[in-house]
Length: 133
Image 1 (cartoon, rainbow, N blue to C red):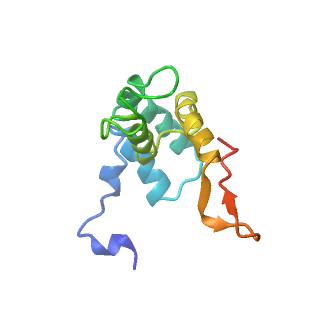
Image 2: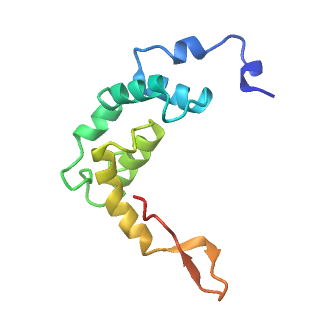
């Protein structure tokens, strides 16, 4: 069953309003299956990067890619871990230098963590590959 059949009206015109580029970006990508080469998606995503809530998160980012807080996880919804999650949820452009700067230290740390779901044929832990980040 399509999600549209569960609704009493069509939400797409509202979700595609240009007044909220983050919502429009997510709608184009996740509901309308637009790909990264779609011109409208790319333009809207660029606008989203300079509009709240994405711009608000990125303004608080430190030069090393982290966010203020005593550690990576705190304070809740404000620390580095949470800010990265929110950037993903809001559909931030993964090619943006600020987003990549935020991801690099976390990716380096994950390279050292054994994969939780995979095992090598010899019974040892498989390493998680995040070399593309």
